[in-house]
Amino acid sequence: MHSAASFSGIPSQAASAADQNAAYVAKLRALAAEISLAIEAIAANQPAALLESTRRQEVLSAELAAFCEALGAVRASGFALSPARVAEMRNAERSLRDALDCYAVLVQRSGRSLAMLARLHSSYAASYPGTAQANRTPRTWSCEG
Image (cartoon, rainbow, N blue to C red; front, side):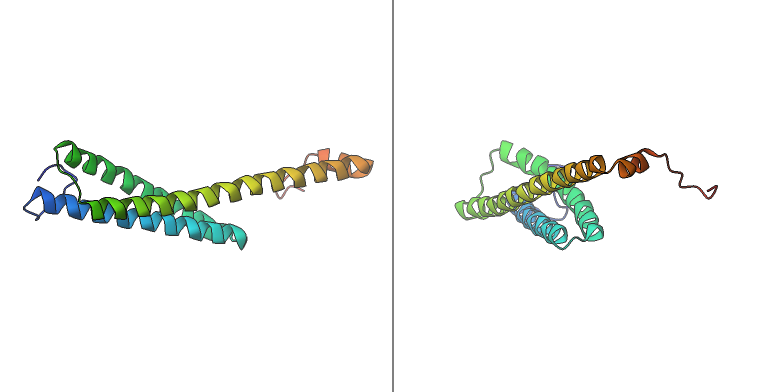
């Protein structure tokens, strides 16, 4: 075995690297799919689904980091992937990058929408003196009243 991240029970470095590459590609695709689910959760205004998707994204990202380290060690030893494997990996990376680009635009737009709503609320509160004063009144969330 080449490293601690290698799969046990696989006798050759080539088989281990091929399996690791296949697992890496599968994780890339899973992360892209998870980002698509997060986009759908944002569009459907489902914060619980977004939170769960974000948690799964964190797990997948950590697993991908481990795969990158293991694959880097195998490649540093001089092992080369076949052109078909490289193309498969690049396609999965491109799909992930496209999903991330879409996600970034959506989050950026959401941030602008929230800022616009905050300005609208401030403008409304400033237009009505009683409302502005009511907004500055300290509130208690306890049962003391």
